[in-house]
Length: 86
Length: 95
Image (cartoon, rainbow over all chains, first blue to last red; front, side, top):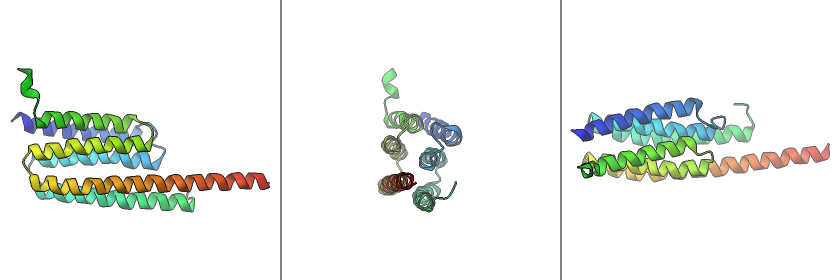
């Protein structure tokens, strides 16, 4: 019983901390730092899925987060090569 | 007893929170990636405490892929920035 509350409150804490860190964290002028901070919020949402036993949603979300990271980083590197003002 | 609090869930939660603090507070991207590995370790520990071993297997496969993608991206963006800096310096010398 205690375990479920620990998962849920850790998930909520991670989601809020990740969101605040992505928005106004230290050094978020760099897009790479911002992308890395979004991973915290992704793990927090996954923990909330785990609390409610949404197994398939959890599985899909883990895979989707990896793919989203790949696409975002590719776009950031490409835009930096082109020299676009982000 | 306080020893009741030492189980897989609480230890993993502590690991995840330490990883979160590290990712937000540390300035360099490489340190951030290392703390991200810590965060993922705590996450996998909590999935295992929920006894979803199949999900834990998928997470254990996808997390190193994510870390490798981040490392490749950081190295590439570092190269691009260094090249840009050299180019701008050469332009300054020509002028």
